Amino acid sequence: GENVEQHPSTLSVQEGDSAVIKCTYSDSASNYFPWYKQELGKRPQLIIDIRSNVGEKKDQRIAVTLNKTAKHFSLHITETQPEDSAVYFCAAAGWYSGGGADGLTFGKGTHLIIQP
Amino acid sequence: NAGVTQTPKFQVLKTGQSMTLQCAQDMNHNSMYWYRQDPGMGLRLIYYSASEGTTDKGEVPNGYNVSRLNKREFSLRLESAAPSQTSVYFCASSEASQPTYEQYFGPGTRLTVT
Image (cartoon, rainbow over all chains, first blue to last red; front, top):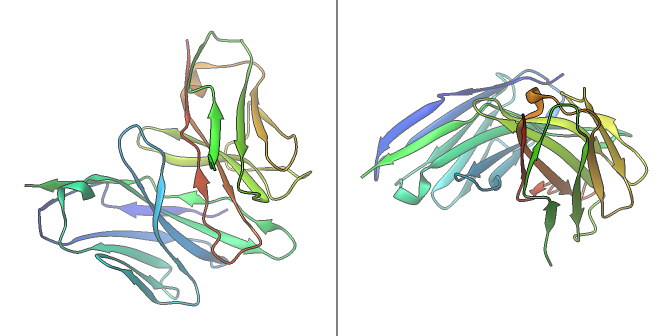
C-alpha cells in the first residue's frame, strides 16, 4: 500500500517568514495530493490540492509543488500570519480504474508555530 | 446543508462493550470513509465505501465493522471495545465521480475505552 512520509514534525517560523513542509510518497499510482489544515479540536479542512498532471498550484499565500519523478510534494506558505498556526497534513490517493475513489493515506502531520 | 454529521461527539466505553458510531452526509456524495486519529500518527483509514452497497478495508480494519445503510449513511461498529481503540474517529465523504475529489470531514467522535 501507499506510504507517506512528512517532515518536519514541528516547524517554528517568525511571523512574516515563509514555511515549507515536505512529503514523499511510495506508490507511483497515486495521482491526487491534498493538504489539510487542522486546528486544535477541529476537523481537518482542505487548503489546497494538486493532481499528478500538474507541477505547481498556487492560491494566494499558499502553493504546492509536485515532483512525480522523485515522488515528493511540498507545501509553501508565504508571509505567515498567527492564524496559520495549526497542524498540517499531506496525503496521497489513487484513482483506480473500476474501483472508484480510494481512501487517503496521510502523513503524520507538521505542527506549524508562528512566532510573533 | 449540514455537510457531514457524526454522533455521538463523545463516548466512554468499558473494555468489551460495543457501540456504533453514526455518520451521515447531505451532499449526495457517492464515497464515504472512516478514519481514526491518534496523537503523532496522523489519520489512518479504517474502512471506506466507494459507492452505495460496497465497502472495503483500509489500513487498520481489525476490530471494526461497517455498514453503508444507504447513500447518506455510513456507520462504524466496535463489537468488543479495547483500550487500543481509544481515539478520535472522523467520517468523511467525497463525490468520487467528480474531478475535484475533495473529502469533507465530519466534526469527529472522541472515544475513550477504559
